[in-house]
Image 1 (spheres, rainbow, N blue to C red):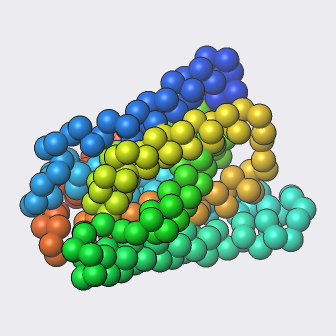
Image 2 (cartoon, helix red, strand yellow; image 1 turned 90 degrees about the vertical axis):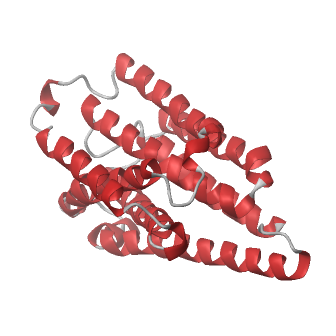
Length: 257
């Protein structure tokens, strides 16, 4: 970003405090998004479709260009494994996409089996805990990135926060549909705590720019899958124009900044 040099560093005390506040706000999204009853309907809420558009726009307009630039960083680094992944960041994004696609298919299959055998439209306990473990890691990485991103200006932090907050609203809707009461009783608290844990780890540790690029790539793939799986199924009756408007407005904002 053009004005990033003039901004306070994200490592400054004020920026650290801001990132802590934003981590708490992201945790609160998990805790209270279920109270937004206007989101829980078919045809799909315009707000959910617009939120998905914002999340995808952030990845394509902001994150992918960063990943492309980040490949140059590794030329000055050592370490074969990170070097391989940094030179193939889009493979890591594909891995993130594939991991969360597999988790979604597992949840759908579990729901179908339970519906046939037990007349319950929810996943079994094993799938629930696998989902919680996977999304906890996912959320912890996002919490970590509140402090450590390739671009570290305050505006970049706020853009990241808005995109992730709206993404969590979309994610919560899908997780609540798959896991029903288990998610409301336990899951949302686990995922909220994971964000805070990721932020705390970020305060205690700092990894290389190359490793951050790898994390960002994995998160990017996961975000794309988690949004697409909510928007594409025919039974969702998603709102294309709301999705397109959300993507267009947020893209324009990022380009302007």
